[in-house]
Image 1 (spheres, helix red, strand yellow):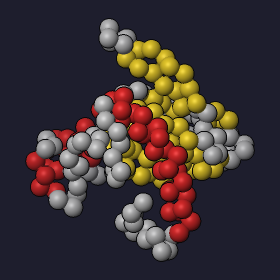
Image 2 (cartoon, one colour; image 1 turned 90 degrees about the vertical axis):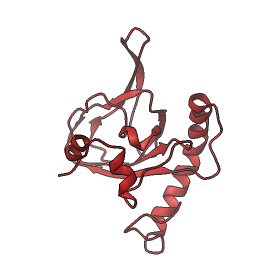
Image 3 (spheres, rainbow, N blue to C red; image 1 turned 180 degrees about the vertical axis):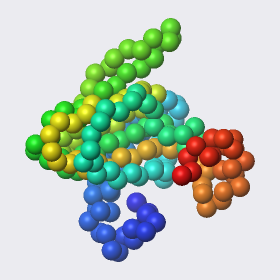
Length: 173
């Protein structure tokens, strides 16, 4: 795991240790998804987007896939760091779209501390609302397609030229 901007490894060694463990556990599942979706093994080095979430207010998610098209997300791993004992609900539900454009429910997984849920981005999912007082902390890894060129805000010309202006303005607040 390389240094994350504004979170240097030297100042946050426990965070990086946890990320190494989570990435190591997610790697086998990511590799299987790469073989199934891209017909290739996951390369030795690969890119993931990392998101840390601490939630105290809970509402039901809409069904969705992760990422924007230009991010080329092919898989998601959600790790539950902690969860208040007083919370109930909050499971992750999955579905897929059939060839006839109908949706088919595929089941659910509970978000419990220490749980790692890995799934391909071809599945849509949502999180049920939580009931009760408290919070939940999650680390989410988004695996970028290793075959795709990764766009970066460090080189905005490439990013802007591939996006429509209206699309950009929706995401800038």
